[in-house]
Image 1 (cartoon, helix red, strand yellow):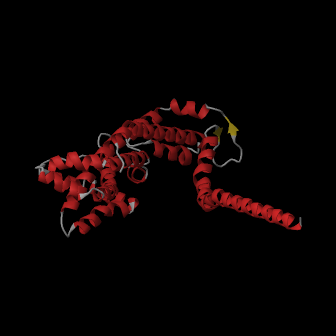
Image 2 (cartoon, helix red, strand yellow; image 1 turned 120 degrees about the horizontal axis):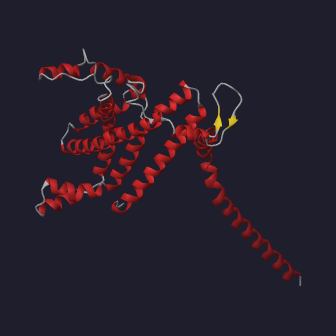
Image 3 (cartoon, rainbow, N blue to C red; image 1 turned 30 degrees about the horizontal axis):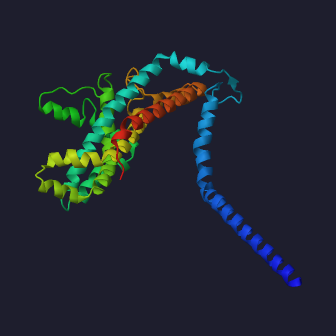
Length: 314
């Protein structure tokens, strides 16, 4: 009888030990990943989620940044924003800048990436030279561009005068100021896009090109039938990042034109800065930030939906 009782007690202890081990494993499975992610989640919440929610809160308030008092005004900031003519000018200029910089920077970067990868030992030098605009200080390069575009002593107009062409007043003419900024934006974006395209080209198997050559396909046919389809995921990523970056242009405008002349180069991000730190209307600046966020979100979703069926991931 004692032997049977002892055997039963041993089985109970064994089952309890198994259940404890299972519960411990389940706890580790669920808790350990969140414990590892917690530092990143805290940082993301502190520097991204909280500022976004605070900006959303401020967009319904009237506040001048100095006074400790805030007044709830509901949608008044949004109504004032959409009734502001400068907002619609900035809205149009933002799209003009994006349409001017994104396609040009992508096509030039792709062409340069193919050329750089086709050269021999000098490819590292070309990569370095083309990547310099990415790492160069935008404040410093903006000053250099201002010297180059000076209507009287700038290198651009001196070069045009050699051919008998009178150069424009690049940054002070409303018809040329935005194009001047687009030229700088393309120059700045090429290096970053180039790196992404080079990484994409290196992921394409050379056996595909060798097989195409055996079948008699020329370089152009190889480019359009092998390179472009296999670069589709890279194209989608570069397109989304380029559009987001173009909508966030600020430094060159702040240094070179201050949104002028006559708001010809004013864009949404620069207007946010003006409303917040020149006119001290934090509510309107926050409302404009929310509109810009919604605009970028819609554009990104539309891009992904339109191109997702044409993108094939390996």
